[in-house]
Length: 239
Image 1 (cartoon, one colour):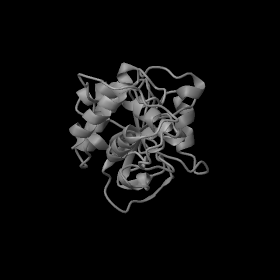
Image 2: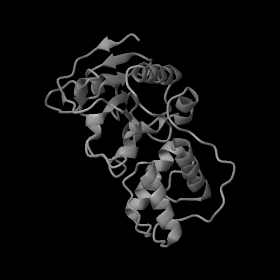
Image 3: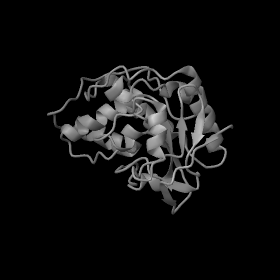
């Protein structure tokens, strides 16, 4: 791939090879402003790559180094997500500044970049996630408009289309075995959702993050039949 070099000083040493990719949106008004911040030593944030809306790809931090993009985060019991992941910032103003669909040129560049990265590192489909997956209480990116299905069709990440979606919705305030099973499934997939059998606010937040990635038509924190069917199918696909 052709990269535009834009070295960021914001990185340190890894303790292990990367085995995850975390996708973000920049959440700033322009790509230029995001690039400037990611390269600002005082900001203390960075990513390995930034993908502009026109498909240009900037390389900020070497993949062998630990960039500072995920912050306080969790996936499959791991809390140092920066230490084991490659971070890709995708230019988009985000929910605060006018969230909009991601252009084709940009999506194709992300797909090509993922293929390039996975040619160097062992990264399973189930470990290509969004910032909102690893930090659901803090983040919404890359959000419900990001075309996860298109990435999966290109060979990167998980996507499922269950045939059936039975069952009544589960929502905040409910308790019981169904809630326990939902929480257990979310935990098995990777989220920090220890089963309690009580559908509390934290569970609703995690369900909302799950929906942003795998049920973007309904991002409300209510685990309806299709949400649960997709979770079950994803667990099978990831096994």
